[in-house]
Amino acid sequence: MVETEHHHHHHQAPPNLAPPPPLGSARGTVYPPQEQLLQLHYCIHSNPSWVQTVVLAFQHYIVMLGTTVMIASVLVPRMGGGPGDKARVIQSLLFMSGINTLLQTWFGTRLPTVMGPSFAYVISVLSIINDLSDSDFTNEHERFSHTMRAIQGSLIISSFVNIILGYSNAWGNLTRFFSPVVLVPAVCVVGLGLFSRGFPQLGNCVEIGLPMLILLVVSQQYLQHIHPIARPMLERYALLVCTALVWAFAAILTVAGAYNNVKQQTKLSCRTDRSFLMSSASWIKIPYPFQWGTPIFRASHVFGMMGAALVSSAESTGTFYAAARLAGATSPPGHVLSRSIGLQGIGQLLEGIFGAAAGTTASVENVGLLGLTRVGSRRVVQISTAFMIFFSIFGKFGAFFASIPLPIFAAIYCILYGIVAAIGISFIQFTNNNSMRNIYILGISLFLGISIPQYFITNTDGAGHGPVRTNGGWFNDILNTIFSSPPTVALTVGTILDNTLEARHTVEERGLPWLIPFHHRKGDSRNEEFYSYPLRINEYIPTRFL
Image (tube, rainbow, N blue to C red):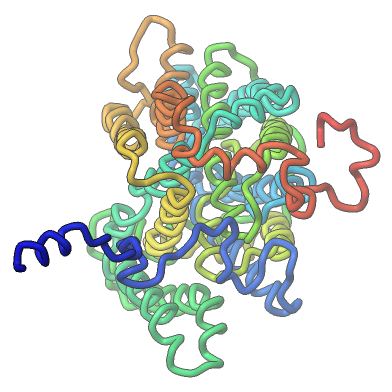
C-alpha cells in the first residue's frame, strides 16, 4: 500500500510555478533608460521669463569668465605683457567668445553651449612664446606684440583644419563610429580631465575657496527644502549669491591687510586687487581686426596649432553630447556635429583676425551650469553673449568682474565639471553594462584618458617642451598637444577598441540600436525639432551644409 502510494506520488506532474521575478524588480523599482532628461525646468526651446533669462544669462557670463582670466593670467606675463596688455587680451577673448557663441547657437549645433577660450591651445601658444623668447626686442612690450602677431598667424592657418573637417562632412562620418560605449569615457573625461582646475586651484587660497564650495553645496542643495518658494530661487541663483558673498568676504580680508605679509603666490590667488586690471583697463575699447599688427606666419608655429585645432574638435564633440542631454534634446546627429566643427573653424579664423590669444571650444563649465540650474534654454545662452560683448567693449566694468579671485571659480568648477562627468556616466544605461567586453573598453578608455595626458602634462617643462622630443619641432608640438588632451585620448582609445573587439556580434550590447537613429538627418523626427536652422534658412543653404 505504501509502495503504491509512493509510486503514484512519484509520477505526479509538478505544479505550474511562475518563473522567479528578476532580481531587480523583486527588490524595488527598475528605472528604464531615458533618451531625454525629464527633471529639467526648461529645455532647449522653452524659455524662462525675461527677468529670469537675463539673470541666468549673467550667471553664464560669470562662469565662463574664470577660464578666460586663467588663460590670460598664464600666457600674458610669459609674453612680456603688462596689466594693460592682460586687460586687452581678456577683452579680446570675451568679445570673440560672444561672437562664436552666437554663431554656434544660431547656425552650429543650436545647443545652449557657450564657446569659451580653451586650454587645449595653451601648449601650442607656450611653444610659440618659447620660440620667440631668444629673439632680440628693444623692450618687453615689443616682444608681447610680436608674439601676439605670431599667435594670430597660427590661428588663422590652423583654423582651416576644422573648416575642412566640418564642411567636408568628414567629422560627421567619423561620429558614426561612436557608440554609447565610446561616449561614456569621452564625455566623462571632458569633465574629469579638468581636475587640475578644481581643488588644486582652490587650494591656492583655502580660506576663500573652501567656504565657497561648502556654501554653494549647502545653499543650492540643502536650503532649498526650507520653503517651496526658496526651491526654484536657490536652485537657479545660489551660484550668483554665493559668489557675491565670498567675493565680499575676500575684499574684507584684502582691505584688513590679511595678505600683506604672505608669499607672492598667495597674494595673486587671494587678493581682490591682485592684478591691477581695474586701473589698467580702458573705459571703452572695441576689439578690431589685426589690433596687434600684421599676423606673422611661420610653419613651425602653425603645425602645433593644428594639433590644438584637432584636439578642440574632439573636446567640443564630447561637450556637445553632454549639452544635448542637459538641454533635454536628443543626441546630436553627425551632420550637426560636422557643421558645428566647421563653424568652430570659422570662429577660430575670426579669432586670428581679431587677435585673441587662444582658440575656443565648447565651454565645459557652462554645460555643467545647465545641469546645476536645470535650465537648458537656448535663449539664456544667447542673451549671455550680450554680457560678453558689452563687458569686452566697456573695459572698466569687465575688469571689475575679472578681479574675482580665481579660487572662487575653482570652487564652482569642482561642482560643474563633476556634473558633466556624471552625464557621461549616464550614457551607460543604453548599453549592456554587465558585458565584460564593455567593462573592459570603458575601464581602459577612462583610465588611459586621464593617465596618458597626466604623464604628458607632468613631463612638459615651463618652455612647453613635452615628452615627445624628436628633431622635428612641429611633429613634437602636434603629438604633445594631442596626447595632453584627456577627451582626445579617451575618444581615440574607446573608438579603436569598440570598433575592433567583436564589434559585429555585439551591436545590441554596444547600444547602437538606440544611437543609430540619431546619426541620420531623418532617423528620428525630433532631430528636425532640436537642430534645424532658424527663420527658414534651410531653404537657402545647400543640403550638405545643413
